[in-house]
Image (cartoon, one colour):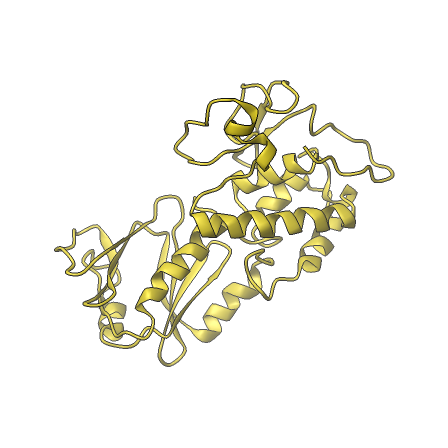
Length: 281
């Protein structure tokens, strides 16, 4: 499932249609009635919150998109080729080109009030200007649930997926099994600031890279990572390879139906007690 930086990047890419009145169609047929209402109307804006994408049209009307596990978006130049019958939603404009949406979990026409209800049920998004990290910490600080599970809970913090979860915990030397209530506010503030910076870079480059400059392949004299994920990482999908920093074996385990990755040396288990300084691997 795409992480939040991908959805914010898509909001930027869809914005090329802003101010135009694209032809809106649903070759697959599942969005045909809504497409007929929208075609020829102006795209007024785009928005993203966590893993939810919104396309705005006049009258406080929005197309709500959630890609889920199988959703894909493809942009192309004009003139648009004939669409295949797997396209749920196509926007087509002579100047802006076209964009096809396939296989989303959600593609629905909603009102502004319904859009706000989606925002209300999500946690703060590190990529949104209106995000309040304190809101997330208040939920974390009273929870016995592991910090690794809490970071994946979209009601706690929106947009963080399996890659950012594993990598930000490694970067701050945090045991993924640490109960949320044992995470200090200072450490949370550092994690949040790091997520903001990492995810902004993800939007800019359209890929996830989490290693610091001194740990790149060039700096360490190691071969670059070969993986369809596409970026340089510390632990994500690196089990049972050695940790780049300490050489210990990167571990993996199932947590809440997702694969967790961590280094037991760089992220040692801690007993509850006074906060320890955050490690900066």
